[in-house]
Length: 150
Image (cartoon, rainbow, N blue to C red; front, side, top):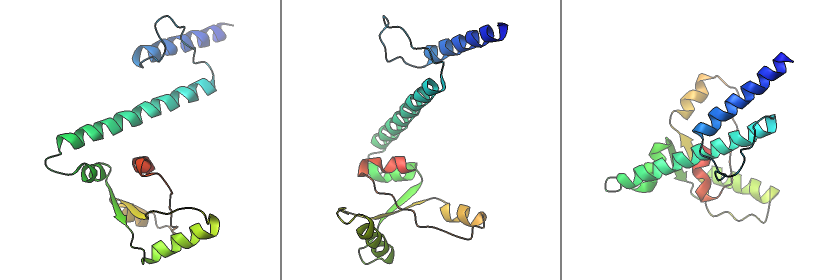
């Protein structure tokens, strides 16, 4: 019985700490939901992840605006996430391979552009692991979601 009471008090204390740090969505008159199940924890972890992504994108946008007279906002964005984006030429062999795969699996898909995305030191990290196989990973996405890919 004492163990159960201790657990309940610990959960209450952790809830109080969480709600004192994290901005609330509810108004002051509404009752705060107790985070006492694994599902509730998952929901709040997802909310925190969303807030962190929003904060990161905001900081990158503000920094891009501050540096507007030195570098274009898109170039700043690419450099800040340590990625290089290269539009593939329609005659490129990788482009043909990807288009053939798309046509075979989803023939009605409209392809506007195909980009090669690489991270700084990605090849070095790959070869350091001495992996025998390497796969082409491609991801269809809306242009607004490119930052989330990495």
